[in-house]
Length: 318
Length: 252
Image (tube, rainbow over all chains, first blue to last red; front, top):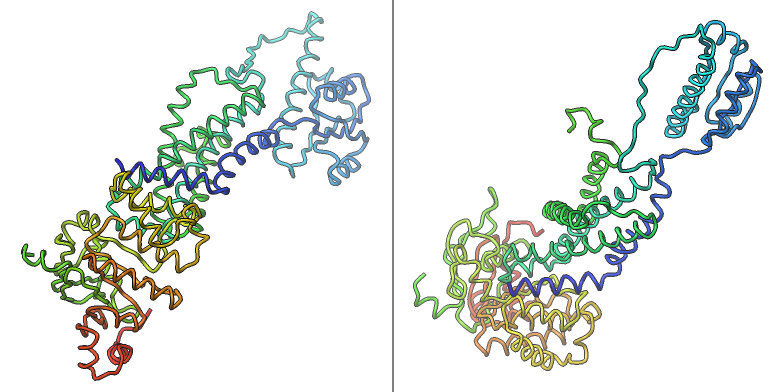
């Protein structure tokens, strides 16, 4: 146990003397947590829409008004032919083209249905997907409004419908920062745990000090504990720092038991530290360790729920 | 090993062999080193010196044969050996990002010295090295010669019975090498057995006895003067060249 004490003392001294590690541990999390969530935002506002209105009727104007007043769309062009609208898209001035064909109102009233044409610029995939989805929602609303007006006509008998409205329990307003901040915090913890542990042990291999340690009576498990405990403590500090930042900057306060978060984090860190240890046994140089850690980290991030929901994976990949 | 041998010899090797697959790195070497002796372990690069030394330090298990260091068997009691030996390698092995004092405290601590002992030992060590003013300096800021001397002092801080030195003076200037050897002599006078590998043949002359390894076996063993006589060579350098030329193994 006494040798463990000296190992820990040495490890902490080295950590606090290494500006690179300190920077990685404290400044990186702060910056990532403050800047990344602002950027990593799936919410799309101001989708540029170009409208081709060949109908020029109350119904078509009502539809355009509804789209532009939704807050998600900016009317970037108003043309009367597709070619001009497409030019807008080609010059990246527009993300979506909505074409209202001539005789739209007439067909809608007479035949109870009418066709619209939507063309989406898919160069920015996320924008295109969400823009199209928003537009669909708006059109559905529009459709419903039109029909409600018609209910006044006694002869129209609406079929009773069941409507499903999802309500998000933990994130009522679908604020993406609420998703991203804790997500980024976990990724940070993983990186700090796995990267720093692996790099630290491999560094001793590179410098040759591990050979010296091998000939001393230090027991293997003491050496491993001496390496893991400091980074475990550091991980907990980073977690605390992250929770404070998310509270100050985003007002995210864990509703559940804070102790439980720390309990899970401590177990999670153990697993991650073990991973770092494993990497360090394979890698001979810090470069190798870095590459292996990156490789594994990519898998974790992609397989983790933060970006790709694991339930969306095919069963074979789980 | 019988008890009697252990009292007399600090190191005994008996047909010590290490094979890696089909390759025999160390081929049945046998020798003994008495207590307080300075034993030079020479050989060209790739002759098997490091492998033999690793076995004696308890870092790798012999494939066959036996050896004992400080009275403990290398294959069965490596932990006991580690407590009783000091080791210093050519690759500098102190922590560069710790200060002189912190390095001393760390190594003394893991060898189980008490706080009082650590204080006393480090004070006398710093005084001997005339490094009292540098004790709060980071080790990386010291010149190589100083580092090596510090490294040696730390390797013997727990008063080990045997010290293994793997090319301790590589890249060090002649003056510091001389000082280094004075430290080795002082330590040997106190009864510590010194097992040293080197490529400097003038250093081989400082040893009590010398063995020269060629292709995994010991080709010659004896006092420097006896070896010079045996090979009718004027210097150890010539003895070494005569033997090493016959090597079939390629140096790495």
